[in-house]
Image (tube, rainbow, N blue to C red; front, side, top):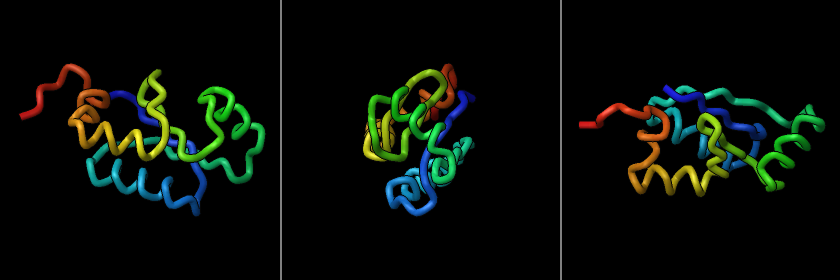
Length: 89
């Protein structure tokens, strides 16, 4: 399983929706809070070239935010990114 990391805030509705989607799909992820760490937030924003949360990475791939995560799920691509090489029935 490829590492999934979600950088977000506690009260952001899109962060909450992304957490719910990942949890519902049974995908383990690292949930990194940004509220009390402005240096980390600045680093994530620079790395992603975006200033919104959540910012999600699957392995080395920057997925984007919740909208992009949902699009991957809707297109049937999320499982393949998280579990490369595993055939889904």
